[in-house]
Image 1 (cartoon, rainbow, N blue to C red):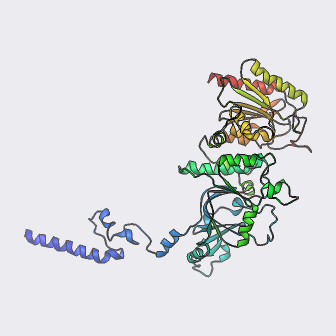
Image 2 (cartoon, rainbow, N blue to C red):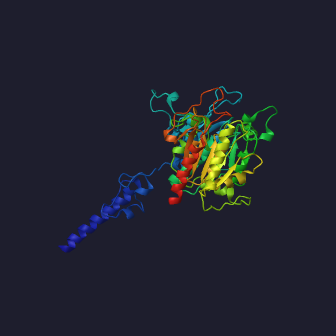
Amino acid sequence: MLRASHRVYTSYAAAAVAVYLLLGPLGLGQIPFFPDSFSSSGWGGSSGNTRDNGIRSTSPETDKLLNFKMSKIVNFAPGYTVVENLYWHNYSYVFVTDQPWQVPKHEYIANKHVDTRIPLQGHEEVKVYGIRLPPVSPEVKEENQIGHTISLDEAIALFGKAEELQSPMIINNDDNFVSHYYHWIGETFLGAWRTWSNYAWRTGLTLPNIKVVAFTKQYHKAEAPPGSNGGSWWEDTPGANRWFTTKFFPGVTYETRPVWEERAASHEYYLIPLALIADRRGGHNGPSNAWKPWGDALRLPVSPDWLVNLRDRVLSDYAGPVNLRKGKKPHVMYLERQGSGRELVPGDHEALVNAVQKLQDDGLADVTIKGFSSSIPFADQVAEISTVDILISVHGNGLTHTLWMNPGGSVFELQPAECTVTDYSPLAIAAGVQHYLVHETSFCIPEECPGRGCPGPRAINRDDIRVTAHVVTDQVRRIIRRMTKA
């Protein structure tokens, strides 16, 4: 009886194996009491489209798709887009993807601005090619689709031989507004660096250094056509834009409008493996713009040292006259602008100088009172600012240097009593520096200041700005007391 039962069980097992061997290649067979590891390692479901061990595509098209360099947006804020495998053709940024609905609004990515390309008619600044099959119903209207429909084979034929450009690449898609230290470093580049830094923060990746900075619609100053103005080139007159960008990314390559005009004239497709598009108008189109292009970008979380990294690059080989060692007392600096056209009335300036100097006389702080000009090397300017704990200055370009202060510092920005111009307070916040906006006889912190505005024909550009000196220095003394108690 036992031998008969044994034969029955043996026959059952043999039959089960036979069924499994017959049906396994079809993805239909499974031995219920065999472990998953066995079933998935031989003829089991991992090699095909199975019903009970999960799903894996058996289509040869899948491998073709995986081998094609599809565009993928890996980080984004309005005005700043990090893209893997960005294509470029005839002045258009081209996204080739089977997920076209993941591409944000085009006006957030790149805009025509006021450039003078001819012809503008029919030009698309952003093009999306959606890899998809033909419609399944005659009611489906192609004009309602996102982007231009293309098959996988068509995509491979059209883009598969695109010339690959060096990357990572920052692309400034702007034909104006960057030939100024604040507008390039403090606005457009700052938003790009924040978005890039957030990409590192949220992925944990060690991102490669930027290799190329491209100004697709602007010239080097030296190559600009005769009669063109500063809006046509990316370099500012003192040279800050080139100096800082080169210090940030040693060995960086600059590509300007003539290079991209030549590429456009070739009618070829180009591939940028990793690109960061910075578009000023796109940032202004964002919901948090608040008059500036980085309104949304600066809300992205980052590591606390995201700007310290850049400052350290600038100062890495510094050998100038400024002592970079932190002193025993807080360092207070009045960065004065007298004679610049945007300045304090002389009496108020003198009173502020005396009040600031008294901080040192009273043994509370080390004090520096000076102005920055083109005669002072940028390395020395950054070195000086990097040692400052409390910075005082009239509204102006020098406040871009707030970015190089140590997190935890303070900055006092002096403006006319009726003005609130929020150009520099976001830079302070981004740098981890407390900002105070001083209005003659009072001050406010950014979240409590009046709304942005500056009435009058001269607006912020005035040489009769008033300030009551002790309004500033009384608060400075409070800050110093807190610092020395810590």
